[in-house]
Length: 353
Ligand code: NAD
Ligand code: DAU
Image 1 (spheres, rainbow, N blue to C red):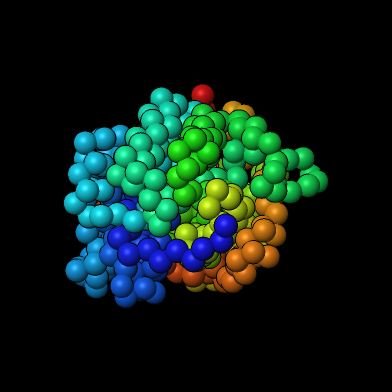
Image 2: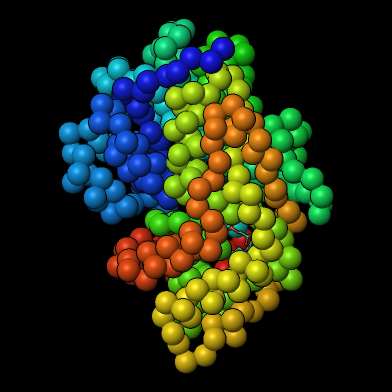
């Protein structure tokens, strides 16, 4: 049944991470009556500095709590004290390469953490029909495509990496809590995001950083793997639409209609950096082919027809514009990059198995 939901007290998990901090910034700006409890464990990927402007601008409506989604007692206190009516669940271990090096953290947070959060919501809401749980997930649950076809909401799950398997498990848990306990849930499965505040271990920010510093640009395999890139702000808009207007129990695929081979992405990125920060040599000369990622999915492509037809959402930022803004943001925010990486990541290759 379609009922418009008006979140008033929202628990956002993982709101100091890449997509979470963009979401919190965007939705607080849009909805002056919304209050957010932002729960984040501040792992290597989550940083308070990503929320500095939000905390200044919206200090009365944004409450940051450092804590773990696996901490059931803490979750119970949060639901009780803040009378949460909406959960938007981003918190996760999110990097495929790290899941190859250390899969168990992914099971702990993505599977057990999601189960704890579902249980806390179930127990606090006790069948309330006006509360809603939105689970943010990935297109990687569907596995890999060859050169044809798209992932739809009906595509069977077939995950390849420990990361995607843990996200698939969490999606199943969310659906099980809806079917068994009648909880109001929605799920979104989105393609690759890029934009400001992304930790520089992922393809685009890592390549920007290396290109600016004149370091090699490591392309896995032959660079023919295809991803569908979406500007993070468009993803956040889509999530807000699903939270407000999505049909309870339903899944929505979100994508950018923007499939590209990795090599193409890196080449355009090099040209964009050259244009904004001319160097002695074209950055394309830094491209280096390296050993492939184990279990590397060949192609992801999303059919985002349902969210367009049912909720009127389509992406608004084209890739070249989004990438230019992103490169500019990283050039203007070198201090952020240094602060978030200084203790824990020097740009080294991860995930060789
Ligand atoms: P991220 O790694 O940048 O952020 C994850 C956040 O979760 C961090 O702030 C981290 O501190 C927090 N966190 C991790 N473990 C926690 C725990 N146990 N308790 C509380 N907080 C914890 O990730 P992201 O790229 O912003 O992704 C957010 C969500 O979106 C994830 O669920 C991811 O699977 C999903 N997603 C990401 C993409 C993408 O392209 N980045 C695409 C589709 C879906
Ligand atoms: O599809 C959605 C997923 O996109 C999200 O669920 C994940 O959280 C997010 O990390 C992302 O996963 P990918 O593995 O696709 O993203 P990553 O940026 O790590 O890699 C993108 C592609 O680029 C992939 O084919 C691997 C390749 N790559 C990556 C890195 C870091 C390289 O060629 N070189 C690199 O150095």
